[in-house]
Image (cartoon, rainbow, N blue to C red; front, side, top):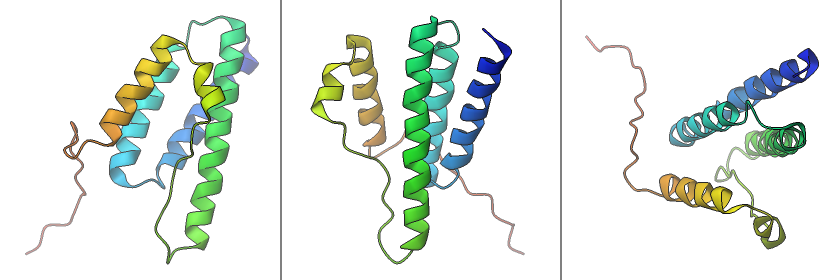
Length: 125
């Protein structure tokens, strides 16, 4: 892969992880794990798939940035992240992608997460 492509991927990856800091802790953890896994699994894909992959993650980063700004401006309202997935886009997914989406939905809606979130606090004396 050309050096320009590698730096573009790294910049996008870092941007997404930075944007995840604005998410509630459980969504941040889930999102970070998912992004790391997806970027790792797409390291060796062909050029066309790599371009689609980057394009979709750039859209994700843009939407997340916009929602983060809207949530900051409307701090009195309930925080809202995410977007509906149009049926026509869902129809373009491969079976593997549908399976991943199903797993992600199940994990995101579990009452008891498989990972624990702890906030660091100063000890009280």
